[in-house]
Length: 251
Image 1: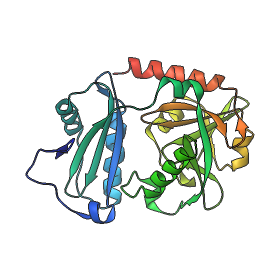
Image 2: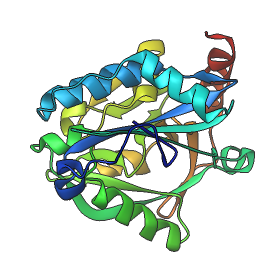
Image 3: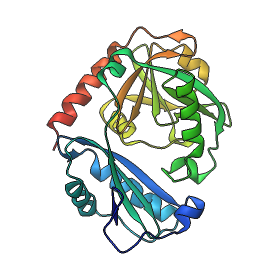
Image 4: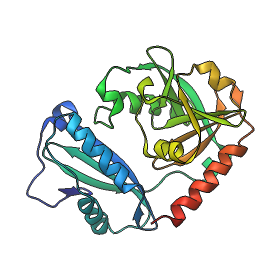
């Protein structure tokens, strides 16, 4: 095991995770010394390990012990797993109050999600498309970039799932459109009535509100999508408020 660069065993193993990206990762929000949605993160990475043929299982106790060794109460815990390595690192949570108050600026990617690839549905170490497109969108003055799939259907953002609201109904793409089924996506589906389907880019431009989710940002309103400004975010703010209450009062 490796914790924040410090070896807890004799050495780091160079395996197929290093050579070919054959591994998975999870990023978990630490809030008031609690790992939020820990069970969901553990279940997802263990299911993913089965999918890619890595014969190991991550236990909750291992993650909790890593948090204790890192000795921090708030921030982001990242777990990287390959055949021979389990690596834990910590960083600060870079999402600020101003970001939530202002909302994100969102743009389209020219790349397409391959909905037939198993990699699309895993939080794998093959994340180059995501990181490259995310970096470019930031350089262009945007906060997030959105992928369509090979059928020109809305899929997901480079680091987020997407929801939109029209006439007080919440919509989100089906998982089989080619997206990672995020922990906060699951939370939204569990707690709200959501229509899952196949949607075109035009549906976003016709929406009343758009918001993005991931395990670190939680729920983020979209202020601008390409040339469309979204001034309305009433339902999004209600969802954000309830989510904040939920994480503050759930053990």
